[in-house]
Amino acid sequence: MANKVKVGIADDHEIFCKSLRDALVYDNDFDVLFTAENGSELLFELDKATIDILILDLRMPVISGSEALPIISEKFPSLKIIILSSFESPHLIIETMQKGAHAFLNKKIGIDTLIEAMHHVLEKGYYFPDTLNEELIKEALKNSKFSVKSIIRSPLTSRELEIVKLICEEKNTKAISEQLNLSERTIENHRYRLSKKIGSSNSINILVYALQNGIAKITADGKVQFE
Image (tube, rainbow, N blue to C red; front, side):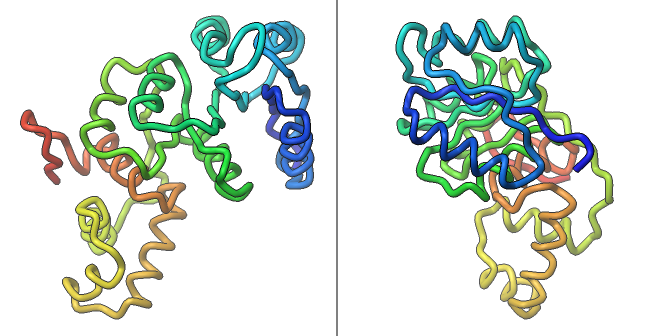
């Protein structure tokens, strides 16, 4: 890849940090410019190196990731920040995103999920985990510092729009196939093409995509309404 994505990693667990760095470098799309063991070291490194994505742990010595997050967000507004933490709750996710994070992931995820999130953040500006419900999405979209404006590069077909609606209604492949009277294989093919157009197969990200592109809206009573 001619232009690699420049990455910084901040985590006080040396073995985890090294393993993550090696996995990202092995992928070939990424160039890890630095690692930092605490928030103070991180701020020093950010003043020296220009990166595209920061992978940030919330709990670190000296200055924690949680304390450093709003400082970094204010000083480097174009930097995409992905929280990678062992501690996870919907309200913690919302809190960090409102401080300037663009994604929140649990450390238990696989490297493929992290890489998917990194590409999604660069392309769309956000990455929501499936643990969020509609009410918390609405809270996240309100008063948040990050942009979630998407661009439809390939317009969705009428069938794909139907499937987006059903996915947002939390229907699985079997239920969608029964409702549309199509085989499960056909639905899986449609979902695969949707994931390519939207940039994610994550149902929460599909919902946010629908909201941001005028396919759906949240009504005053908190319901999702499709146009």
